[in-house]
Length: 244
Image (cartoon, rainbow, N blue to C red; front, side, top):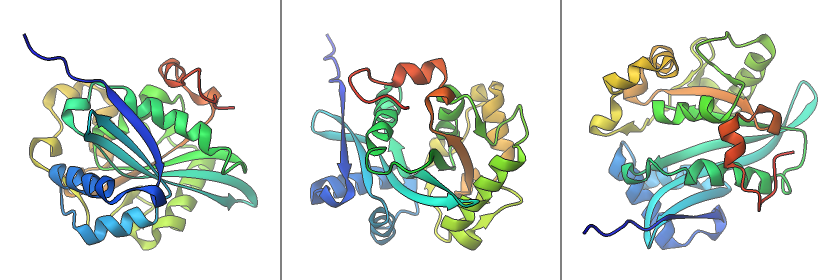
C-alpha cells in the first residue's frame, strides 16, 4: 500500500524574517526548474520584495511566491499594488489550491499595512500556468483573448510597468524583457498540445511569443471582492479577512 502524501501547509513570512535555510531552499527550488538563475540575481530580486508565501509538504519546500506590496499614484489618485516576483510550484503540488488560497488571504491581511486606494495585481508571467490563474479567479483582467484592453486599464498597466521596469518594458507588445531572463527547464518550457484547446492558453502563446526565452507578459487585475469569480470566492478562507 502506498503511503499517503502529507498535506501542503503554508506560511506567509516577511522577507526580512526569512531564515538562511528558507532562503537557500527557495533558491534551490527555483534553480531546479529555471535556467539562468544565479545566487546573486536571486538575492538581488528577493531584496526588493517585502513578503514571501512558502508552501511546505512536511519539512520540504514545494513552492513559493515573492511579493512586493507598495503604494503609488496614478492620475493624482492613490492606489496600492501587489507585484508578484519569483514564483514556482513543484509539479507534485500542482493539484493543490494552497497557493491561490493563501495568496488571496494574504492580500486581505496586507490591506492593514497598505490601506491606500484601490488594489491592483501587477503580474509578470513567462508561463501559461501562471497566466491561467487570472481567468480562474478574476472576472476582469488584462490582456485577455475575448476583449481588447480598454483605454484606462491600458494606461494604468503601462504606467505601472514603466514605473517599475523602465526601458525593459515594451509598451507596444506589453512585454518585459529582462537583461538576465529566467527560462523554465525542459518540458516545463513547452505548452502541451492538449492545452492549446484552451483559448486563454492560445492567447498567451500568441501574445507572448518569446515565453520560451523568458519574455514576461505584463498583466493587471483589480483585487476586489466584486472582481472575484465563483472559484475566487471559494478561495477566501472564512476564518480570515475578506476582500472589502
